[in-house]
Length: 130
Image (cartoon, rainbow, N blue to C red; front, side, top):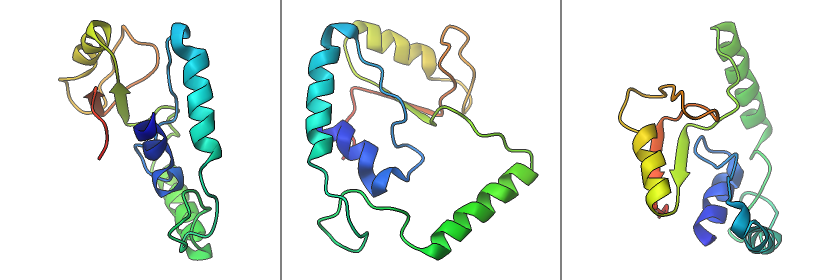
């Protein structure tokens, strides 16, 4: 749980690999949600230059302008907003390993017809981020 919250909110969630969706088995959903909410409640919101801050807005007006310009340029070049992230992280036993095997091993961001939740660039199985 600690790793998930750290990954989700690293750099205030402004990274391409920050989790966007968390799929949790219904048998542990209540416990998971309670623990996740508790950790998130304890995050510190504040100024980006404060070392105690866990979550902050975009750091500056120039950063906002740069992001807007990058989005405008990407759309002009034909980019489409993608509703899924570039990384899938699976945690669990045999079923997670089977899913990871099915998702990995082809060219970058390949479609996987058996899964309806998208395409992924990298797959992690039972790996925490350090």
